Length: 204
Image (cartoon, rainbow, N blue to C red; front, side, top):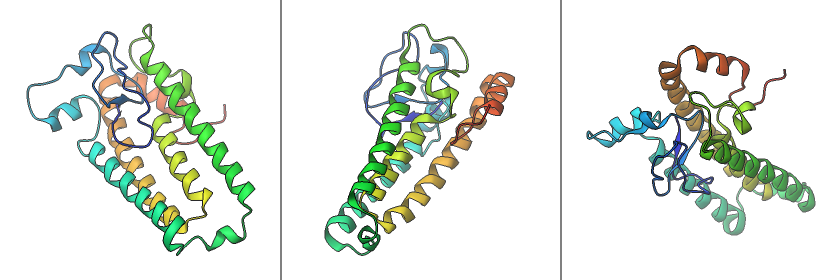
């Protein structure tokens, strides 16, 4: 299970585990574990993260990339303007429209993912309803759309370059966490994985 702590979609502090305590600034993503899967071990934090289905360096990586992106976006969009020349060719109204659409989809994915995760009567095992029926990593995708929206709003080419690095990072930790989920849920997760797109919804 992914645990998202530092990225742009840390909108709530919840637990996707029935009856479990909510850990401050933690948001639980992609198919959730049952309560027994999230007992905190007495060993180091890396062991705990792997037990919870997340990459050991996922939190720190997301924090670093978030800070880097915001620094580049603010610096280049409003001060240096070294890569925003395309804004002269793209009307502001069009850029704001695309940004608004990206943010609306991002908010939907984030809220739908949280609602499924926080549902008291969530079925045990792999969650495949709500936002999870469209993509396997809705909150990671919401974060990517957030970055895309900001980059497109000012036509910041440096930001698009950094966004490609962020995507590679998210794809890497998503792959890592999916391997853990396959080991945990076996055939159930493989079936879910086959019928649900990773980043783009599959056509039925």
